[in-house]
Length: 216
Image 1 (tube, one colour):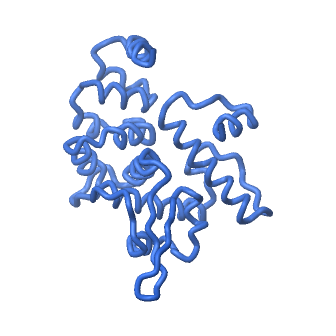
Image 2 (cartoon, helix red, strand yellow; image 1 turned 30 degrees about the vertical axis):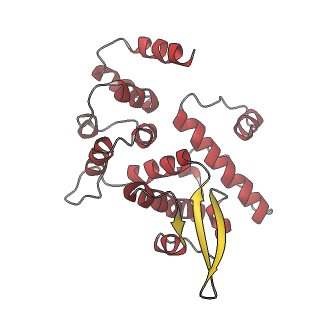
């Protein structure tokens, strides 16, 4: 309902991909939290994360770092220390834009937080954005080629689908890592990049028909 309200208010077309829907959801949460905590601040219309003002973008990137850390280590619950390590001020949880659910406890007379993202798909989306900001290739494990290879081996399909939406699969080095199976077709659909169609052995129109039949 929030996404429908936002897009209809600005007379924009509704997102046609999962990546677009969840990006719109995150942006809606950011807009709502900014209005609640800083009513005088006026934000421009936001269509992508890169449209965010620099301070808000940095706060989002800190959340993306937390999401990536969690995905890499198989975590969906995060401690106060996890937040601090990712640059998130535990005393300003408004900077998490309402994307984290938080519970408080007291350990040795100190306030401790346990957090999780609103939905696993939100964590997967933010993980994908973090990966898309890494260098494509490099000598360390923190480059897109190495990370995507690991994600494929560990079956993090939804992260890969969101990653395809962020990067549009423009790098041949990344495409070469995929097996040309249904996951690749889903990634090509999310990428919305006609240059990827040459890697698909069936007419791309049939992919849309296939997805439609699955939905029916």
